[in-house]
Length: 290
Image 1: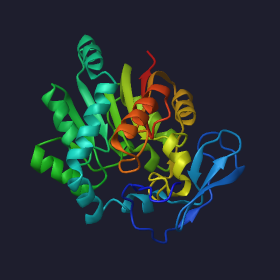
Image 2: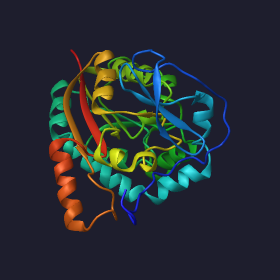
Image 3: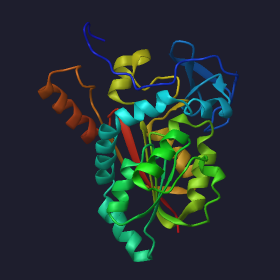
């Protein structure tokens, strides 16, 4: 990394001592790893069999849930609400939201579920577009904010505890969520269960094989305590395929962080990252097979 380069870190829960344990690879089940990235008080390993990158030892799920209960996380989300909403809208357009709405209208099902709906800004936008919207947000403060300030239907229980009906939603969204979960395979299984046949799942997450990840290494802004997994396009695709999804579209964006290069250079690198697929963040549009 060149001297003077500015890196940007995603906000993360302050590192604390939590009960943790060594876990096998969440994708292939093997236990053969090599060290990959190191943080202050945590470390990532890469599976020698399938290349999945995960924090190991890993905190227990109950400890992970507690991270999002306080004021810190809520205040961070609220103060960045406008920026996150803008990125969420851009992602919907990259996924071709108009095409997804056409499918929903064809099957007479405009029900959408956003998992990790935060303060509800994107969910509100979907309501404005004519969707029957449901949110899931385990931060009770954020869920309550969305319910009271925006009159949205948002549950503060984890996805699996909501007992949504089978084949209920035509669209499920999970933006910057799956990397925070202890068991991504179980999560995807539940997403598939609640999706209608032919329904779409939009998932975004940092791209561990992107340009920024390779450039910054241990200082990469997504190599943080809260991100239990760092996916590549290949490993996330394999998770989805294993759970019975087919893949329709993969997009990446974000070539270089703001402040790391002059704006004309940044624009050129961002353009190339999206065109050639080495962006910092990826989006996969997957479909539940009929």
